[in-house]
Image (cartoon, rainbow, N blue to C red; front, side, top):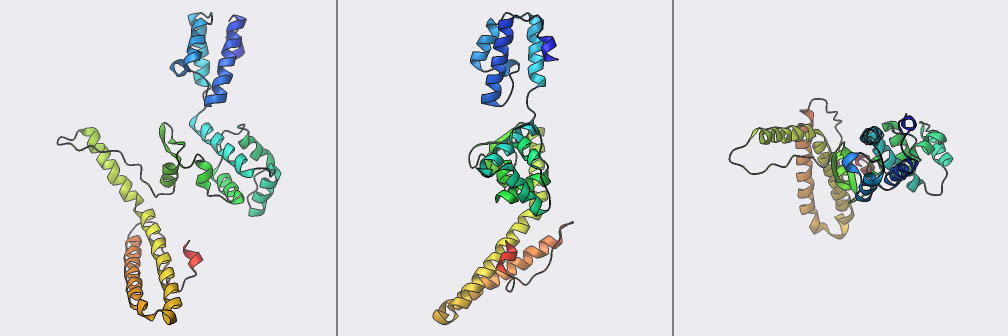
Length: 277
């Protein structure tokens, strides 16, 4: 379709436009459209001898071919996979996923890495990340820690903040300014914050439960090691153990009150520490 629209455009105009598009694709990961043209492309745009109709057609073509958010995300994941794979072949990575029980073909991996595939499923993301020995979120937001991450279309933050949002450690709260006369937007933002905090309660309590279990294992192990060499330290450590157990009981009680929570009671002092990680 684009070739047909370019008919009648002077050859020099066609050449310069293609070079502009190639340059923008290489450096910015997008195709130029209207006001988004970099400065020197704007200059070239002004000197290309095109009619207003031809200019509008080319702008339209640029807009219609810009990368979508999901395509940009897939491209970032593909670059991360290729970098982490290193000198190992795509077939090696495919074999690893097959061994894990969910085969991702060599051609699929190559297509993802070379930007021919514009999406990646959560199943593929999980199994490829496991095969490469990294958390899936490291593939999803690879520019750690301070590079740009577009968590949803048009919403940018740092990669580490995006990663912690994805894992539930960070809530992307609207910023509320102090005011004596809240307007409708302020009220909507306040309601949004309350909703986010309420919905995050399950994962926040679950994480706190893990932390308490780990503390119990650490303290119990330390008590066992110091029982002969430093018996005077045992009473204070037993108090710490008791406090952690009480808080753990409270956290599990709160979890049980949340609809949909799946809570399996465990004896935290006898669990294998690896089970809480």
